[in-house]
Image (cartoon, rainbow, N blue to C red; front, side, top):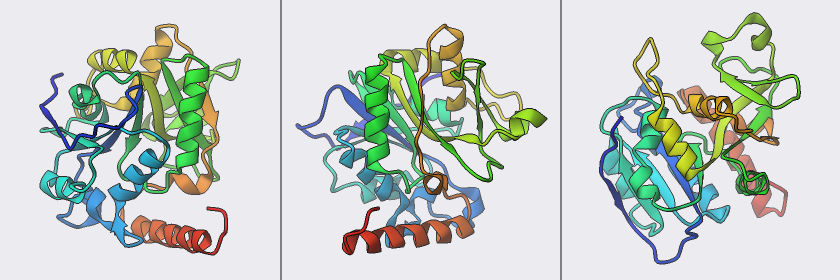
Length: 268
């Protein structure tokens, strides 16, 4: 795989030891709109704004947004942020390929968070704990997971007999036993930079669509003998991403409730 040139709105003040990659290149075909998915408004602001805010609030100073469809709108929406870099995914070849496109923009950061740009319910506190867990374990890959009442549609977290990470299994590939697993992958990752991009280079395309998936990377690293720490701390509410207008409305309701709680001194 090859990645395209990266551009940036750079800052003189960022933590050189960490970066975050936010995947925001998709169209969102189920949204019935020509807008890039991450530009739809939720609680009065673009979806992407909430994700980038969470990353910055978590103390990660360098943010790399991977853009593709409708990238002019995405870039314009981030124009006032001097800590945001951009990388372009010129072809929609999956989340693994999108992450690989960020390599030059990520630069020399030691630890790299990778998040979906359509998950505006992510909390800074969870990202802080994920990065701390990753560093304390001196891991090459770490993941935050969630246990939810209805895991339908989500990738399942498969653990081995010792309770350690074994694999992420997508719904379509899951066995009957695996479908009963309630622990899911909300797409909150932390990687050692060198290990991440080496594993991305080793990805093979999916048999059906020819895309490269980031979800394969933890399994690749596990197969190489690395332990992948799991942080089972993501609140059930937070895992809702936005793929439909109905989900958009639900997330809007949740975020407005959080804003109300915050303004009245409640815990969000």
